[in-house]
View 1 (cartoon, rainbow, N blue to C red):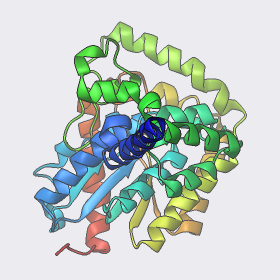
View 2: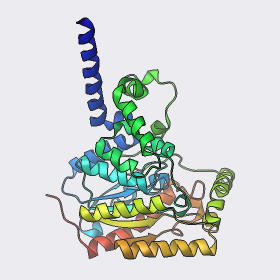
View 3: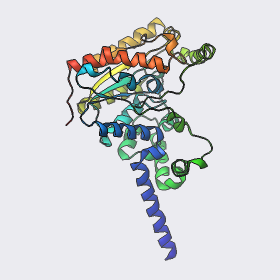
View 4: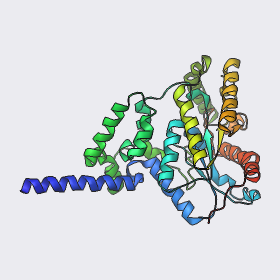
Length: 343
């Protein structure tokens, strides 16, 4: 009898712990949970303001700076709440998952900007890359089904998910320690670092400035990484399917959507062979036509001095890009197609 009660208590405690972790994603799914908490707070503070989000990778996380729009967005007449909900390392598959999780959490944006960056769209993503971007143990059935539609081995994803459901105390021990006893955690995890220098509008600033010599070293490092990807280029099937799926979700939810190609330094713009550039433009024109969305090409909007490594923006470069996006894109779009004011 004692053993039965102990087993029952253990099972009940694990179920309760699982519910706790899913209701507080900032504990085990640090980056998503922190941004969700900040976005909820911003919406609660100004519930009548229309919500504009940008989704994407680390290039959006560092490059889209909503605080630079403060005092500049009044010309829209709507004073939207603009928030950066990018996640480091993510692509359109994760953007789709993030938007669905936001909707399921009760956050419904009025307008969404979606990142497109050619160098990372020429290859399929593996399961490990997805698991680096989200703690799958925090996903519910709906989120799991969405993510498994983008992996080549969904059975392996299912097994990973079930493992995290059975004994969450073990699989989430580091996250729980970080939340309950942070001084016991000796080395911050990668998601922890993504939340350092993260402001209340979701903008991430890993560094304020970079020396010329260091910038040159970083540019050369990433040039070697991406150059070969652009030589023989073709849009991979899965990111294309994910982009179309997230735009379709926006249409169903009556959320306005636009696709943005963020700024690149001159070195990166020069990496594109003429054939690749032509194919990219043809692809984006197809997205604009087929999906009925605005496509914004901002590749040359920021001078080289605004980048830390040729493709991630420094704070001043992020301000330049964001203000121009607000002035040249957001304000005209809102003026032409007014979105509802919340009541």
